[in-house]
Length: 99
Image (cartoon, rainbow, N blue to C red; front, top):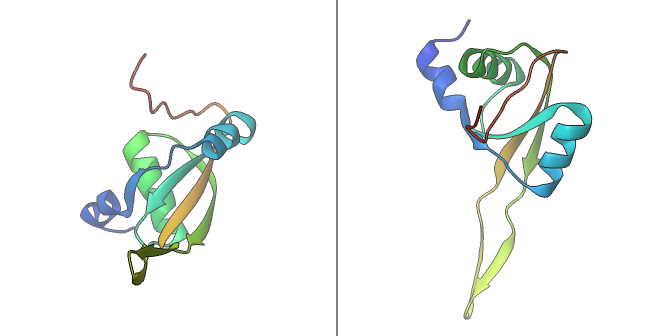
């Protein structure tokens, strides 16, 4: 069991996009942006602690930063880590804030 302070820093924000909305409706999976050194057990514990749900499975993906040019200077955006969290039957997360 990890310290509560670390678990509260693992999840950065929900990743809301068209693809994440489709996945949520179809497979009951929710997508989160997480810190780059987070592990699957940490992500599972953080979601269960913050949203009072039971997590079935966690899948992670490292997203590479896009290459960008600014005038004559080449650069790149930072990469980040994405977590797909599937919940057990009967649990749901509502990001809209309405009841």
